[in-house]
Image 1 (tube, rainbow, N blue to C red):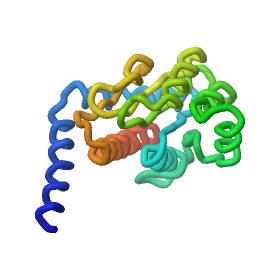
Image 2: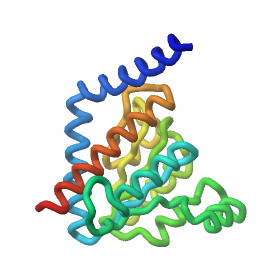
Image 3: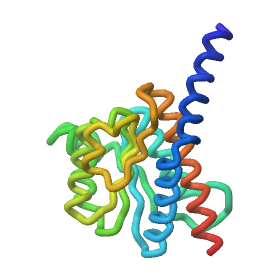
Image 4: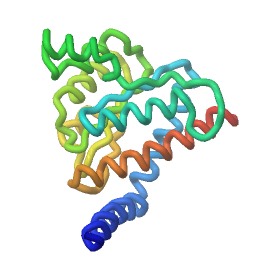
Length: 192
């Protein structure tokens, strides 16, 4: 059993090591931090979406912005789009699960807002449709995927594609980079 546990930890460390050595990815994360800080200063909102474990991760990151990360400070305008279960189940039932996020972005998204879509495969139809709607509305999109980005790559303004095809390892790296983004946005926004 210990051997298997160690193997899984090594897999996680290997993915994170590849992220650490990827200059393009690290530069991209820095660019995203600057983007989010700038948009918050303009009064724009940050939205997150995902499915399954990625929905949980999206909600976690949205809470880090709207609640707090390291410092006690004012709330930042951030939310996960799946948290209204009455809306989610009604739209999925009455229309289609594929439009749960695009319909909401069409209704509440404003030009200049930011939409982060988390999909390990990059092929989630509801996130792709949300990104297409976001583009029509002038909303900046940030895809968080696994290696290559899948179909989400074509509709992402920024793409954080983790160099792995292993879903749990991708999600772990998404949370690592998500926490880094939260920490640096919070520090820059509230100290400048």
